[in-house]
Length: 154
Image 1 (tube, rainbow, N blue to C red):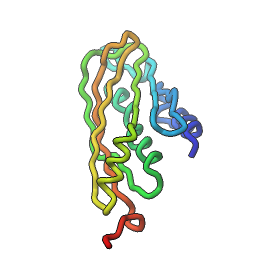
Image 2: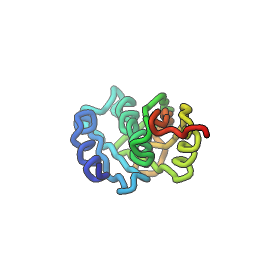
Image 3: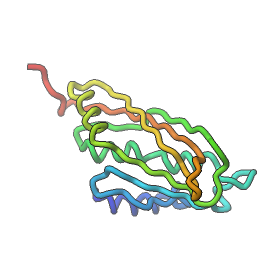
């Protein structure tokens, strides 16, 4: 699927559409993604700041999506775990960027060549318009080469 098509689908996906989450960019090579969330009446908490669940949701699928498209159809890729550390209250527009390096993709390929499971952690920050960190998010993905695509010992 073209990255631009996926971006449009995600922007119309109800969990993003109804929380004000907007995917601004996914590069054609699936190396980078950028997402933002504007403050809306329905994504505010009691303190009139961004709801923590919405902050986490804005980062949720991207590491797995980038890995799926970078690794290709020979691999299973699933979200395994995640955590979020709230640093300061989020107000206004908040943003997150994701960059999947070539070295990380090659490490996942090497670790799974014989069919082994591999668990990869990624981290990124959610920042506000002033450049301050609102939250730190960590996501772990599961990667495994599909049985019919695994290297066979000689």
